[in-house]
Length: 364
Length: 276
Image 1 (cartoon, rainbow over the protein chains, first blue to last red):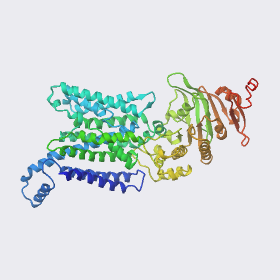
Image 2 (image 1 turned 180 degrees about the vertical axis):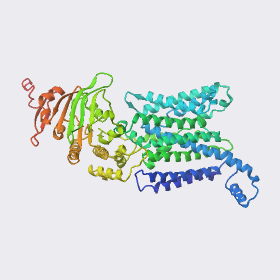
Image 3 (image 1 turned 90 degrees about the horizontal axis):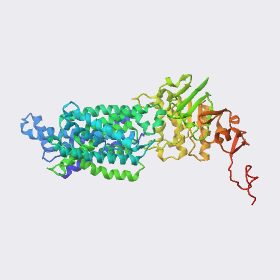
Image 4 (image 1 turned 60 degrees about the vertical axis):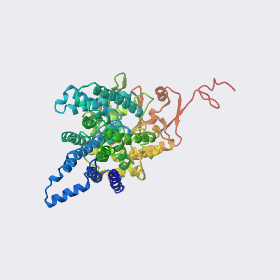
């Protein structure tokens, strides 16, 4: 069983190293470089997905898949393999795709939040944005707004927006925005929202919510095609918006005045980016809970490897973030098999030490 | 025709007027200095010219077009700014920073093309930063960083370059290097330069004309030898100075005076200085 745990890690790291070393030659971000890196990371994503598909608590792996393929080629009856088919394509596959989408959403949003706040330690979870979204989603379910189409994601996105405005308001003193104050504001808001979530969950009789502790730690086990379509389409929309402003984000990161002097309409760009990032975060959180640190680790690793240009950073973080969460979720569902962990446990265990490491380094 | 014309500019941050009734013109290829004490509105004036602040009164004309009719992107094609300093939170390389100067010339989806790389390359050549191309901005010295910021401004291919106290954090060697470079560009590229500085002597050395601001008004404007006069400086800065001539260039030179007597006293209290 153990080899399966290391397999994704091994493939992930090796292909990734290959991708990066082949990319060392030119430092400048061109369209072809963005495509090249994205293609490499897409390969990683697909390989990770396939490997994760074959790993799980029941023994449906490589062997049975080959047998099924063989039978299919020989034109034999496939009805013997219905159990395998169910496990692979109705249980594992949706969950893997779901993890990929949520990971990509959180990482892309992380990149944008870090850029807008000009703070490499910003992350939707640490800043309390995920918590705000979760509160929004729970309120939607409790008040029956969930019956309206897009009711739950709608309130979750509103929760995200309110939180970011709140945190920004708390942290901003006069003209400056201090990094530590921002993080502290995030921690406080986050603690408050966690309490609100606990309060709402423990006082309600709503059976759907009773089991919804997953909002506190993040869980991908509720994956269904409906949710996948929802988060997937919002990710595509949000990503397109964020990507079209990625060059402007480069300028904003070097200073808002500088960006204005270089012709960027800073206020409008900030609002659009904030809206897009909150949209993507809110929708992801409304179906998967607050999965922490993905939006922190992935953008930071990508920045170290590929540089700070958001035109490259955004797609590579999204793809690698997706792969990362697939690996984390595969671990979450196999490490204590047949029991399952919430995936947030795994990401927090990787992310928290990484955060401390970043905090101590402080030079980015 | 003047490249920039300010007409009775008034600006306020919801309170008293920071700038009031400021009018002047800058000719193409001129090197204009803006001097004045803290709070006299120097930086505000610069931000009004580069379009960050919109004046409540008056009109600014760039190349004969009113700024109110120009989009931010269009303004950035004619005006570039070299800021005081630029601390990078994220590690951009020198080349990336210089290429950012191409931003006003690119569309939303476009990546930099051959022409942009060539222009950025030239800008780095002119500012002697080509060898730093792949270094991170944060790994450079203050003087090198300032040169990179000039290169970025040059990559914008502006007609006007604004300097916002660009030498405030540089030692004298780098101050002179900085202004020599700007002056050379001013001469060779017919670049119009408008610079805010605290250093009266540097302004006297490099500027064609100088504007002396006081409480948001133009106190005096003219050639350095006209503006940098003892009476003007004393009145505007409310401090004791003597002005004589730089023996080599003949430009006016300001010497600061302390009210404490140094060895031998000074001319204010030499009479009253205690005899030790």
